[in-house]
Image 1 (spheres, rainbow, N blue to C red):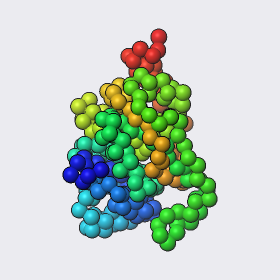
Image 2 (image 1 turned 30 degrees about the vertical axis):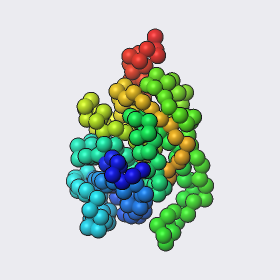
Image 3 (image 1 turned 180 degrees about the vertical axis):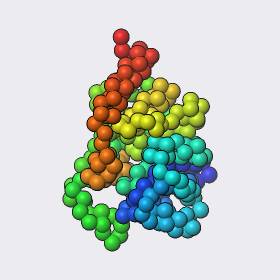
Image 4 (image 1 turned 45 degrees about the vertical axis):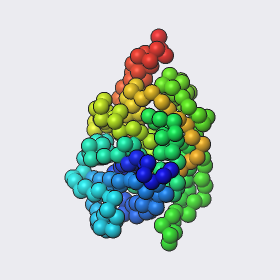
Length: 264
């Protein structure tokens, strides 16, 4: 894609106690073949040296926007990222993970070529992670490719029907294997609910689904999701809250699909 026609992409990265892996994440974003990006690093009250690592990178890469604030959780932090973002497209990354060098370019090329409101891609799930290698990449004992949607073009109802085939999957639910159009988010005041601690990504995606029209699935995987048993989602689970959230999500599915004419 010629540089003069490259739309700006905002890549939003919440950071919390990520000292052991944030450098790998940032480096993978800085090394993207797609250059017209802004990297929004949001330090959410880390108690380790994550902030210092981010500050070091902010000094050497003018594309980095760094904000430090008291701990408020990933949803509130992402909402701040949405307010700061200036890009035509939005991409998300978690500080545990890392991107293939062509990840952003592949997503944007598909979005531009098809005038897509969302691009969705398969991803690499990395399990049984051992140690951090010298070059900043984890040694991978097992890598599996995850994806459920055949490559191609989908309208709103077509995408929604396929989502219902795997409604609880990471493929549809998470943020980091997708590219979003910022205008849709801003115009419809979409965001994350700070009081929701389970499937908050899926709730956001359901809201986005209602307002987007053009969806494109691509076959190239560009994101490495690290299965980390010490992450917040594995160590800070409120079972009562999950039950309450699941009830809300099932109701949300019913309401959205009723409005789309897919549920009677």
